[in-house]
Image 1: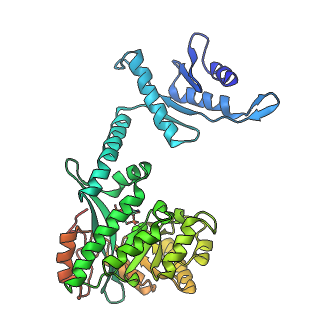
Image 2: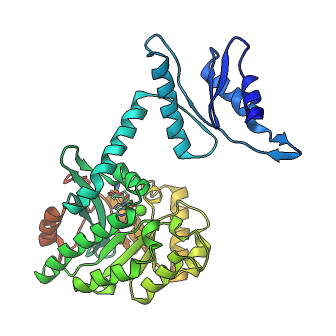
Length: 381
Ligand code: C2E
Ligand code: CA
Ligand code: CA
């Protein structure tokens, strides 16, 4: 710490301040422009410290703020800098972050949402929404992807980008996934019993959910209770789920799901790396081509990539679902390339249960076409 203190001291002039305020925390006050100072600190810490013949590499998390005429008193300034510091520490690694009031508001929102989430799951505010998946060759309904929404009593409808990170940090992802699946199966069972639809549900699963030792037990009980067959379920996993070694819990669960007859799809395909070896080694049944590969179509370079991926899928015997189809040109193009299934605002947006039930009444048996005037006008969220 003494060596680090000395390195930091050399970053500021003699009439400015560098002080150690905690075990491994320092405060620097300087009138140098922030970017210059940050660069100097980074450079000062880049080389390993030589202590008792050992080389020690340090990395720093830096919370900073710019003092101006509108700034509060010294203790407020320190509290704000510390707030930025705590936030940047939680992100990990060698980083710097400036304080702003939006940072504090964002943090407040996260804390409130985290507090509300458990109650939301109990009281049914967490809802499954349904987005149709279509067979491209004839426009018939194939299945539906289940996408979570939160009907928050005061904040209105919340989309996953707002609250999934909160659930993840709170360690609540596994329960959240199961709550969504349970509710989706309840609804699907009702539609099945009413003869409205023979459901095929694509369920999203977070990496934590797949590596949960209780996954298989919890999941198979749910299926059985809702009289839904294993062949009516697809589980969508993302590449991060598959990172670990051969004997990890995720791999064991994936094998068990596959043995139970449940299909597995690799989501967001085409956005990561290293997926090829995973495709061959794991019992994956299909891939979902990411929207970033669909929206530019039929543009030449994307078209080449999509063709190559479809050829690879055929070679490996995998089915392919194209995500984010928004217009008829993309749909026709993908169908011509031999892509089996599609999903996107062009066919229908994700719908809450009631709207989806009404939609099923119209479309469960009839081909779904993308209207020439472009879809998405019936938009929900
Ligand atoms: P995802 O699994 O890749 O889902 C597709 C996302 O694209 C959905 O966003 C969907 O609403 C959106 N989308 C579908 N078609 C189109 C289109 O034509 N154009 C555009 N612009 N967007 C389209 P959403 O519902 O906001 O979900 C975001 C992500 O949150 C999902 O990405 C998935 O990773 C995650 N997620 C959603 N529900 C769940 C869940 O129940 N459990 C878990 N673990 N993750 C979930
Ligand atoms: Ca998905
Ligand atoms: Ca996706």
